[in-house]
Length: 246
Length: 240
Image (cartoon, rainbow over the protein chains, first blue to last red):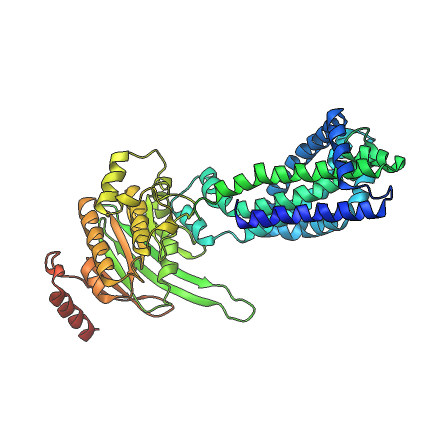
């Protein structure tokens, strides 16, 4: 185990200990001790409730994340490569970026009903502008020298995208993916809270009405663990593979 | 004979907020015979790189035409060795060379070429792992592999030490003698030009025109003698 990982582990343990200590000291229902929360977590996993709701949320996450990235990348590259398009649509992006997530969600539900499509659409509309802006920056920063080289050697369009543009956009893509994931998680919960009959957001709303702080915290921990796993098992390896040449 | 005809009536950089429009090249006409090795020699900032970009088809905003035979030069097979190696950092040496080809590569052909340029050991390395001298040779290999009809070289050996540069120059002449093609080579080093070129085109400061043309009368063998090159250079300077 290397030093930085040791520090990370120690810091998480310290946080849990502080929590446990304060909760034991206060003895109030608003702050259950860590041990109680972990037991509740075990139960929720055991009776299948948490895996089901977490699964639904993850499914919505995967669909809306993929759609937002795809659409955002296409728009970002188009705006970064064509100045006229950029000047035409820059304001649209700015407006979309500034609409509060809650407004988009409510409008989508009002316009399209309390459906899955509306839920996904609300998330996508919220996320696409962020991806587009990041990718646009990446596209503007493309190395002109390498593009000239590719052009003088008559690279095909596919070759230019695959071997010249894509590797340069990759760091921007990772940045968009990371911030995107964090943002989408948060929005999806609100979407579920307002208009779905399953998912983490729906469950949290239920616990809120029941004043069940233990379950809220147990679900939150499950949540954090899943995000960390996505980072460790998907994003990090992708990044390492793409950066072999450095 | 397929002649390369460069006719640039006018090339200017448009006015910006603070600067006036700048005419870089004006009334320049140059004919280069097939398989001829021509050096463009001129003061820095005289538009040599601009001219190369125009020939390569990278810069299309100019008055004039670039023809190879009766075709626009852009339609012929052009190899371009830039001032910097311009290798893709995320591709290995071999991938960098292969990418220049439209079709798949004949492995023997690649190995021969890499051997000739003494870079076979590094073909699976990434550009960040090799020296600048090696990277320049990889850039050469990339240009040679496509067997170009026209090879453009824009000061490809600057910032190399003399020994290294000399070796690569010899390689270049060897390769060109075995696979003849038309070469346009930009340099500001007169000795380099005398060593390499059949003909040296002296360019004037911007707006660039042809100031003078000199045919290098030394044989390829004579050019390996530094004293003879120096003598030729002196004679050029005195008649300039």
